[in-house]
Image (cartoon, rainbow, N blue to C red):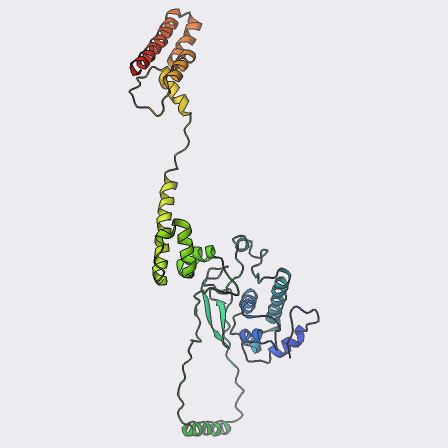
Length: 348
């Protein structure tokens, strides 16, 4: 029979708690047991226990009511969100707005690092399915020793001890069968998930070309530089990874060079104003300058714009009647204009 369904309004969490606290199985096993929790799968198991702050190996009989209620409430919340949105979205924008803003969808499932604390994410096998846990402190472990019943008397204890020794002596040695997959938690190495897919750009950004398939790598290289840069189709994945990595490093260097060359502030005056100032001041055209005006522009500038020194002299002349200084300024402008015309005639 199916257990309690977090999506059903008539679910009975009290009855479920009564069954859970009698079980010596881990909560990681119980959540995936449809006779206890009806509905959650492997992704939900990882995310429910993460948000509840419970380590997956915690046994049912070591859960208190408060911890169980937290697990149940998170189960209801996440499964309801999945029902409403049609997707397994476990990152809560109200709890972790920065994670939601950068597009995170899950906290630890198929991750090598916790999305919340950046701690290591461990994975191991529980009943044939991969289980996940944050080792950075989001899911603290419970180190609880199983209780042993008191021994009634020394005589009974000694008798039982002798029986155990005799039984072990008669029992033939059994071969140790090694599991194909270690049951010890190790840091998870993300895989390409079809249940909870991650975009190519996100995989490339977070884990590098190693997380892409050969087909995806070839598609990126062809899009960036064309088929001429593609490795041969018979090349292995390591060759494709190195080709894409080299291409990305080259792009990064070009981008860095381009960005460092754009740090100068904009000029305070325009190029035309700078060239006009040169022409007005009578500076020789052979002298290096940032900008130049054509001769027509320079002649126009001379005729309408006095040099700063000449403008100052004119101002003084108006105040003190310096007609000679003003005449000298006019003569200088005429001389500069004749020089420009002479240069123009020579070039023609």
